Image (tube, rainbow, N blue to C red; front, top):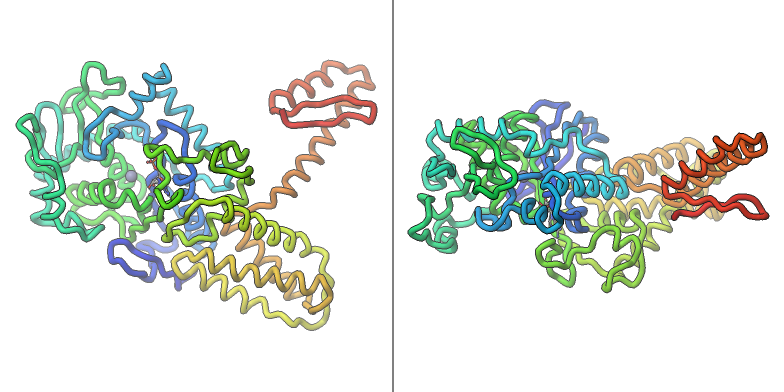
Length: 486
Ligand code: AMP
Ligand code: ZN
């Protein structure tokens, strides 16, 4: 087990030694996407960062339960309980059921995550699948005296809670300043205090998604789902809670308040926040309209793009920045990442072609220690990548006959590449993926040819149509059969 992992805790604003509550088990909760539209590249950055963290915790010997939710209800346009429901609005616009919207964008999200070679979480709970748990939690918060009901709405009483707990513990903001910067309550307002937020929202007659509750028909507020689902799957106290930095001030602040008001203690020991992907210095976001979709990036179909970049180039570009630094999107930076990634993959391809000698000029254990130290230092992937280029240098030197490596050290080097490039950074060699696809397809094409020769046209047609459905077109020519992606 790795006992040297330091990670930056937003709660203490410093790096701390990571010791899980119940080693070797680690519980990690990450706020997932709101599935009312396509995920943009900024969202992907956050999920790729937590994928790296998940992968490294597993490599470190921990048994990780990684819970990443799907927000499929309750997210209003404004963070402070105002505006339309994001799903209902989209459903009206696309003339679909809200659940059709949810299904469409959840599938799209999973496709994108697969393209970026991220691992699925251990549990992916949805808000709509946990309405009962959310209602139960709200009941306890009311019983404990930290929430109140007015005309079918339930609000969290921030003032009452703040008397016993620190509402701004995560961001260290001054509560007075926050009050002064929040809109004053008007005569129509049901809330007792300006900072109070909704736990349960009364349905209007036209509300598409609504559920029965002790307070009448309605739907949960956005924040309560994460408190309820993290407690259900990880317990009232768990190891790591993560999300993008933009979530700290409202969503996570309210999550802590809800969980504490329910169970009387902080839900997570470590709060981790990823920094934003920006475009010309502005945060990439759905609402700002500067969000590249992953597919646009792969095809190059966007006015700001010179050309398309492969998923692994984009991932390598993301991994070259530390998760707590901002990362600005640019063609030049992506071009550089493309070159770097190719150089790395070209060296990896040489590993099986190296000659070995009795003695070794290279000490792979020392290099591995540097890689581990980089990752133990708050998952410092840019430093890790710099160390991996030392491995590239060693491979190229031996290949060029300018240096000698022993069989034992070469085995260690292969293991290091396997662990850090493929298992931890989650990169893959796209060229060799294509090679595999090529050989599988060649086999299928041969089978079809055999079937035709045996006049088994049912089978040959089945193969052709089956491939077509998978988006692969066969073309019979004089030289034989070729294939292309349609
Ligand atoms: P949403 O679907 O808007 O709820 O966002 C899903 C996740 O993506 C959250 O953890 C956000 O903090 C994160 N996120 C949103 N915009 C960006 C961005 N530009 N860069 C990095 N992460 C982001
Ligand atoms: Zn959340």
